[in-house]
Amino acid sequence: MSRKSRQAMIDRKGSKLSLVRQCSLLDISRGSVYYRPTPAKAQDLDLDLMALMDRQYMKTPFYGSRRMRVWLSGQGHPVGRDKTKRLMRLADLEAVYRRPNTSRPTPEHRVYPYLLRGMKIDRVDQVWTADITYIPMARGFLYLVAIMDWYSRYALAWRLSNTLEVGFCVEALEEAFSNGKPEIFNTDQGSQFTSAAFTGVLLERGIQVSMDGKGRYLDNIIVERLWRSIKYEEVYLKAYKDGTEAKRGIGSYLDFYNRERPHQALGYRTPQETYEGEQPRERPEDQGAVLLPGVRTTPLAAEHSLNLAPLLFK
Image (cartoon, rainbow, N blue to C red; front, side, top):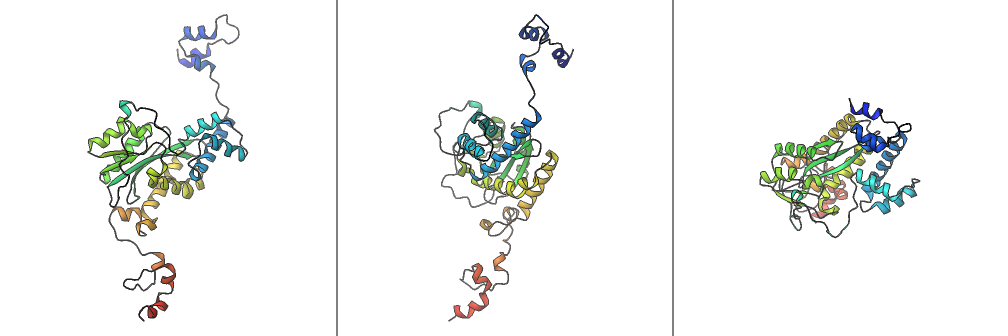
């Protein structure tokens, strides 16, 4: 007899046996009997709140559940702090600020020291980094993990998942190795990255493991900037209907980000050009300019470079 059939045999009103005794005799859990599905409207409201909190978190990553609850109330969504904490936890949103480290990691989840403090990162494959973010959809949500080369900002690999199990992170990591391998791999202290399943893959390849201080937003600022770009330039504009649409949209955006989106910090090269060692492209303000030896061309100077040249030779 199936579990569903046994649950249907529960008599909530007419039986002389208590619900606890009926569950014991039918070998089913009491939780399955007492559980009542959350109405669809309440689920939709929770998803709307999570999407609102995710947008606000991009602007104010230092908001904890107290401030986020106050902010939600100010937006016309009065909710309790417990619910705010639950939804923030579900969306993997954690306030970033210094806090005392009062917990000891288990042997299976060793926390490694932060190795990037004071380090000059000046070449590709010197440091890779990874992080996870929440992706809202019209119905439901997903988690996105990305592996990036720190120096070039190149997104080496990514995966989507509907859970925070470590498997999708390991899959992305294995794919990233098709590009090479770093000297150091830096992450936050999320349970996916501290797990032996993830760190073991790195250690087997002789890669040093580095981890941010807990709640230290700036320690992994490169990938945080990617999240801001992908959400404001893609995710928030599209409101994906389902996972298939999200995968297609995010894949298209990351291809654009790697191949076509120049970065000023990279000398107006794209992440792919930088990672593969290609020459920088011409800056927009340099087009048509006459560059003189020893003269730094500003946008204004580029526009009037021919007029300024005679003065420079006086």
